[in-house]
Image (cartoon, rainbow, N blue to C red; front, side, top):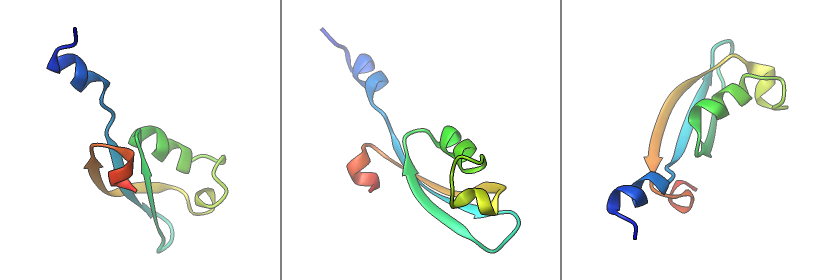
Length: 71
């Protein structure tokens, strides 16, 4: 049987985030369940759009209980 603590551990939060380029007047809005991982991806060469304007910094985040709310 699961306790409330077990259920809370399995819940995944989703985040809406706004990134701000440090070199040009650009912002980027997205959503994710892992904000630090996503920021690293935006600052790497693997992302076609955001790699052109890196480095990016986290400007704003908002937390949601599930993906549907974040979208």
